[in-house]
Length: 186
Image 1 (cartoon, rainbow, N blue to C red):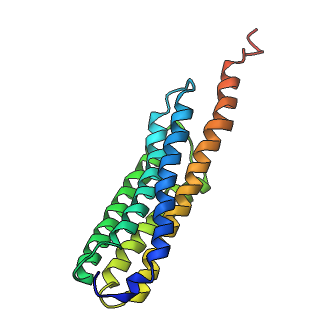
Image 2 (image 1 turned 135 degrees about the vertical axis):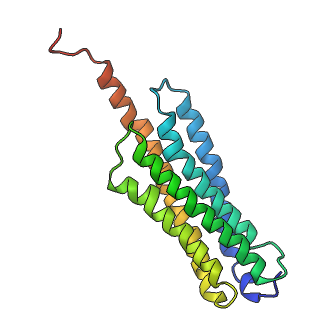
Image 3 (image 1 turned 180 degrees about the vertical axis):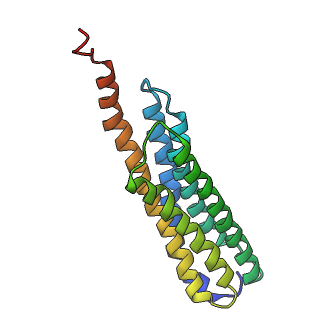
């Protein structure tokens, strides 16, 4: 380990958070597989805009949990990996936000912007900032990394549930309404 006993105190936290993220990745694949068996209108653009980031967030949580258990020789090495993860996450969230804005299949509402863009952006930015402070404010940085991981985990859970309920309950209603004959023309 880094010679930082503070990291040992986080073992249980990252075991739980990392395990949850891994399990949720698997569950998300199962749900998407079941949904994919239904006939669907063209929604791949929406899926890559809303569903793929959820898997990325769960993967980032799993990655952070694993990285914090690696035997780095210095806090600077850990800070570099966590900082790079945070910066890449921020850049990815800029891309996701742009995709949300540019796709025209689904009109995002406030909750979508909050949970698919703002909160994950804040989590990745927190991770990057915490990594910067890791070498001289270890305890505070570890709490910030933990908060970022939890924010990504809970945002991912929300977004996975939102996508599932949308696909199970809303899409069939939209498809049924589209198939109904127009009463005015008949």
